[in-house]
Image (tube, rainbow, N blue to C red; front, side):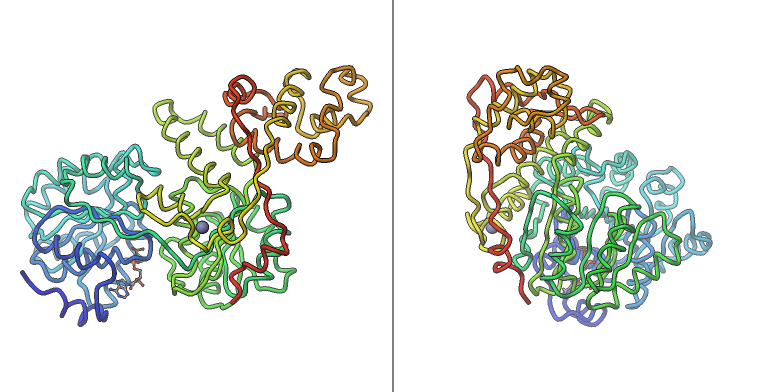
Length: 512
Ligand code: ADP
Ligand code: ZN
């Protein structure tokens, strides 16, 4: 077998392989089918780019996003790799096809819908092939978080060239998805190579949201350096950028609705800056090479643990301390549940599982990193020493009694009032509405009026929404969800996590 090291050094300018890269490249050069599961930033591209230079014939790379392909193309061309893309926006398609047929390409990037077409298969029979690389391979699985039906059509193409080695790559795949990728792409189990997912320099913090703008301004104040704030709406990014500008730090907004020139300028400004705060939708981040991002904040729930890992993973790529802080609200979970109700029925159980995993991460009193890594099949110690819960162990309060009272107040008032009203009823705060409704005569009126219990009502409401024991209707009215029964009838406990006070948290900050 050819020794890849001289090429690693001469073409790529790296002294050595990183992590599992060497193992992956070795399998590929030996012609063996492989699935590489490597976190973002671990250097997946090298795993097929290096073989593409070493192997005879072209490496055909299937990639789901044209923008991503063009980034890759630029980077590969810059170091002298003979690469091309074959996409609908390329005007040089005829020339690319000619070069491909003459064996003058190391890398050819195509989208899955083209790769699976008959015309492309014909083309492959007339060109020298060295390797199939399937990037973002989780797209092949319905279990994955980003299923693309076109990926399913790749298998017949791969099987038409059984002697060409295949390398699937993904950053984000839980155990079920991984097994499915192997199955769907015809890769044997021993062909899976998983890199460590831990990012020890990232400090994970998760808190309930009360005033996200203020909370993020506080985070910025204690965290020097560039950072990203992820928001759920385009308008939200602009509002946040404006609000955070008052902290004195330079800010920019980024979302798909911005003029492309503005977007590119904002991105370039961010990459060049040492203290800028980028307020963005998740459209921001892919393919951006900025190693010194010091914090990533989420002002709302990410789509899944996979997205959370990927988005927070943009912090601290240089290995220096960085913070990832997620602020969630019960309404985020309610909205996510509602959205799940709207997807096709077959996909709902998977989506629900994904949301429950996020809920567990948000709700835990234990180590965040442990839950995160366990999701990716990584073992980790009980206590990582670098997440909010490990640094400042939260106290747990048994709130089961208050939770039951909350649920009965919702039930007695007819499952149509909002959290604020229920709180007033429980405390026994008389007002015109409760008087008019005759609710002051109910046994639940004032049933949680002691200061200790009253203090728990708000967080209990959040916890009940998070557990799907309560659901909010379109008007904010609360009604029972499937989780109510366990608490009311089956003795299920509700433990509340009391976050440590801010002063204490500050001491445990990234402090650089
Ligand atoms: P991924 O696709 O896994 O997110 P990339 O392929 O974009 O990661 O690589 C991330 C960064 O790591 C790039 O800047 C790349 O040049 C760098 N890199 C890759 N392999 C090595 C290596 N062996 N040594 C040093 N840097 C590397
Ligand atoms: Zn921890």
